[in-house]
Image 1: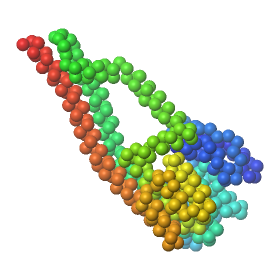
Image 2: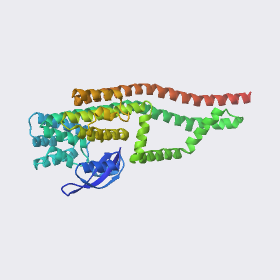
Image 3: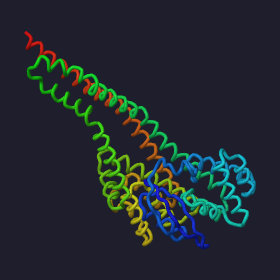
Image 4: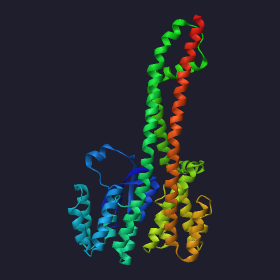
Length: 403
């Protein structure tokens, strides 16, 4: 996912700029057009930390901040407070000036007669299209507090899944870093200490010792080339993922990976089911829900499958049948969707599908992490054993020469 900086013209004729996380430039333009704006330009500025963000301050909100604001606003509205008063209280309770300014702008727009969804939409790039459509559906249905409560739950579940993955990866990542650091220390500083002794006694060293010493010399003398190669590879991969055609090919490869592809398909299925189910519960039509859900998919192959399914649903094809066309979604999920359509409870069944696959992904990742730690430990032990063995073989060969 890259970050794009864009310029556009609003329906009122006002020019504005903003930033948006998206897989491609085309998707940024499409989302601006769907919001009723006229795109002027869009260019990739990279992702993650940027100096410009540090100098001017971030205009967006983190997922946690959006979730907290959503839950707090739902609570205040549920207590019977008017919307503008609720927003005023949120502004007073804001954690920092950035959030306070954002909430005040939304409150001012509401006081001018605009709806909450319109006020959120005018904060370009801060709230997702999915979020805005959920709020709009709640306003139309007269159940904004309930809609925001469901939205807060949705954001919490999404954040929980992401946090579980990150937490599970912390220990293996630390183990990998320590393992690499230990190996570099052995190859660059320890092994070269034996080289003068081996040269002094002469003779032919074992092949394993020669290989290990060659690797150590390469790390010591050409480390900068290795770092440069890694940087070039990362930049090349990012450029590949920024191009729609290349990204689709990579996403297709990821789906075909044994084990990893299945996890990706389950995660995307859970994301699709929860987004679509949540929208349906709030009264959004199925076609609109699928259109919005497509934009929250991170795998472009599955996102294209959803877009194609939406076209088929428009002609009267059942959702389960439309999604099964390319065989990329799990069969159990499709069967559950089919049951939901037959019983007239598609929204409830989609949320059950999301819960099922969220749980499966969590269990699978926990198992993989539990297996990864011993595997890394064993791999590190084998590599260190090979290095120690190469030194011992060289010492034994020298003893034979002396004898």
